Length: 162
Image 1 (cartoon, one colour):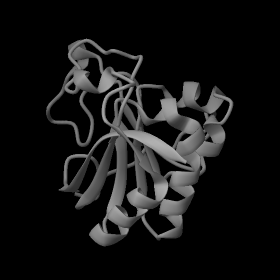
Image 2 (cartoon, one colour):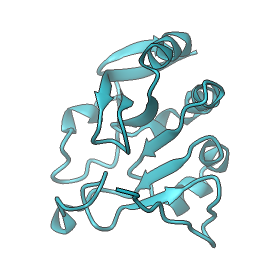
Image 3 (cartoon, rainbow, N blue to C red):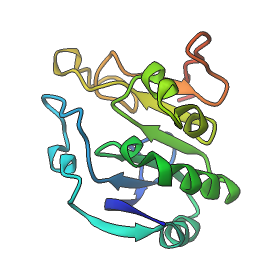
């Protein structure tokens, strides 16, 4: 089982609280105008990386994990076992996606994915709502939702302790 990966950034502080290992996935159909990473839209870019290799990197770094891209949700079938394995290492997971929480919930395996992550940073980037003062997101429409405590009917927003 492998995933299409663009890059792994070790020790980033921009994709969630604290030092994190950020894994950037290839492929995105949202194609948000003003996207900071349009090279990630190509589903054929990057390289295939198996879950075991990703887990070795995560273990060696001993940091929590952020999954970004592109949009990792386009690889949902392989994302779920990866997330379960990361959780088994005792790491928190932040998932960045252009899907809204409600859209993610309605996907065939969306609820299952939500149950494996700690926070979903959700929603498309909207250039007209860009706000550089926001923590861990680019536009004010995007929400940081605590999982698996949330449902579309009862959303718990992540609050910073910074």
